[in-house]
Image (cartoon, rainbow, N blue to C red; front, side):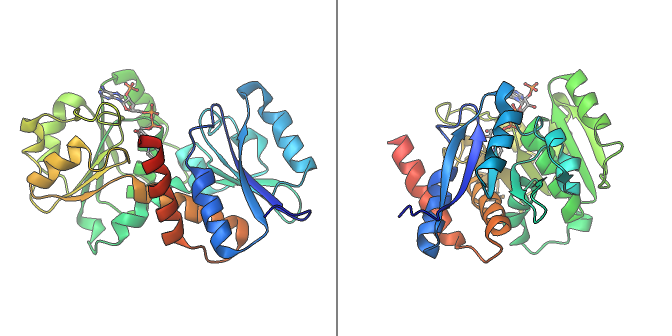
Length: 290
Ligand code: NAP
């Protein structure tokens, strides 16, 4: 129930109407019985600064940030965490005690969370990442945080790959990163302990597509982890191929849940009901795909 004291949270984006975050966060808020509400907040790129001032004026407690504001918001914040600086993007903002805006990136924590449930000595492991866009940055930072021995990233555009590589040179976190063109994949996959798809290939409605050919996926060692950041469909074609190959598989839903849980914890400063958030997402995805 909305009262005169209801505190405001939300997500800014453009567009924002397809966001699953309101369902996930309001599910948690209802379960906790606290006087908060989480709103979709459509903000055009040119209105970002004025929106931030407006949020300060009305006392918004915090908000998530999605496309196209994840990079653009950095210079408007007073504090940016090291991990957000390394990724070059912010997805969670909160109001500090001094009434300033601070930001971090919980996608990295979200990415790592399901991997941590597998007890592996990451210092001996090789990660291979498909794609070099925004989500790949969180995956690289996550693999670095896990302590992976080597991180290999592949892409189809040589210039973008080089820029991606250069962007980690003065990073606040240490990354043992190697970049390769897509053609190198069969060789890389043969040595992969963790294979991550950060491309949108295979995402609904293109559910029959996979980023890898049968020949490429056949190189994946038995027992390796195949991780697809896509959450619809689940499993993707890529994960089905990997499972047949004897890999352990992880889909993108848990990353989505855990980045949300990490954000809510920052805003509320208390434990949050992760299972309720997971269920709310499942339910919302079921509705969207019906
Ligand atoms: P993005 O910034 O647009 O990056 C996409 C990457 O995939 C780019 O490197 C792009 O290469 C590459 N790519 C696209 N089509 C390709 C193709 N046909 N062949 C080879 N490479 C191709 O997108 P993003 O924000 O990183 O998101 C990527 C995926 O991750 C989406 O499916 C998104 O839903 C998912 N995601 C999931 C979560 C989660 O919480 N589970 C969070 C973030 C993102 P070019 O640059 O050459 O085009």
